[in-house]
Image 1 (cartoon, rainbow, N blue to C red):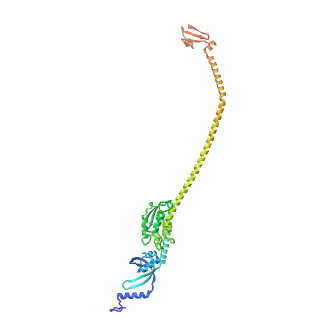
Image 2 (cartoon, rainbow, N blue to C red; image 1 turned 120 degrees about the vertical axis):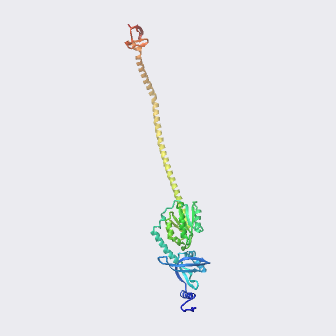
Image 3 (cartoon, rainbow, N blue to C red; image 1 turned 30 degrees about the vertical axis):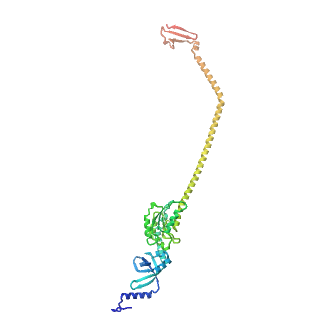
Length: 413
């Protein structure tokens, strides 16, 4: 160690940093595990640079901060080991447990060189946060709210939140378009990141753009991935928005084992985008089957009603026919009776008429003036007119008196 010429108790900056490096090298000879929160991530020339922090238990106050690096060779090894989970771990706000080599450079200062990442630690932290989110949603009465909405009888207008490049989205569209029933669907894509730091912000933004009156349902779908890729779907704010959304929300997050909090608050959760498409097709098929069954029931009831009406008409026809026959029979009997009685009735009628005529003739004979005069009566006329009273005659009038056997002319004295 090079001592200053001025004082044995004074170090140059280089000497002090060299001394610190030696002390750290002696005390931290082997890598060690450290827990921290990722504050910032930067990739450059194949390397990954991290800003790590530790906050207070009940506040956002930063208690400690340090820089870490994953050199390109180690980064490649971690990518091979963790797959897509590595990208999820390297997101601001993620709590991580890193195996680091502590080094100190005289010029560049303290540096943590990352050798390994314990994925299970982050998953454990996420699970704790996930459970807290579920409990908070439960207390707010939001876990069942979207489930209480009713699906329309037929689903056609679908607002799809997904990434246009995602294989899951393409599978979903293909499954709908090639359904064997020929059902027509109208999916409209609202593009969003489906993994990474922008998931919550972009999905929430797209939900605000969806006009409920123009769609039947909302579908949130993505392809498969690691469990850590799904952490954004456990966000309380996003889940609260979905729970309160005025349309039923269906999810197909694309994970066979794990269930996100978004799945819990959605109206219906299915494992994959293809499963969501199959659900929509089956839903419409069930409506069609119900419609066809109703049609068959209506047809059966109509047939039964028509049969009943036809039977009623036939009964009425038989009654009318019987009544007609009865009336005809009665008329025929009456005509037979008239035919039998008509000759004798005619004879009786003629006999009665002759008798009446004889009587009239006798009466007329009695009223004949000749007959009357034969009984001693006479008829007096003056100027050809019958005289019925003595007052009609005056002295000197000439009159004619008619008797049964002749007449006499005379003058009134």
